[in-house]
Length: 137
Image 1 (cartoon, rainbow, N blue to C red):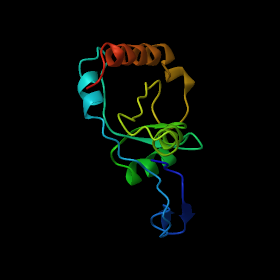
Image 2: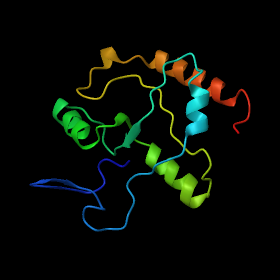
Image 3: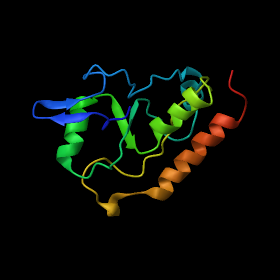
Image 4: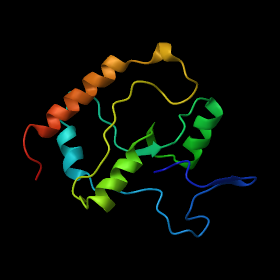
């Protein structure tokens, strides 16, 4: 989901669909085989919506607003929607298109002392090894 695609108004945020524009700002992807495979990964796996934003969330107020608008979101990133858009629309690769993120820090006020980038890379490596150990069905 592109969480910042739309317009901020005095009464709240409007997505393109809210404004009757026919532009998708989110994709629902079928990930059952990937989810099933990753359930065997050594790292904890959380399934949910990943928000794509042009600007990282750096305040508790912004984090709260995103949590209110997207209660099923589990992460934010800056690349996901664009990659999925390219795979589905441009390359026409609909099978197993998903986004997998390794989390190094929580959304909210930026405090680099709490980031754990090595742990995030380890989790991503473990997920990758688990995914590619054999072909998906």
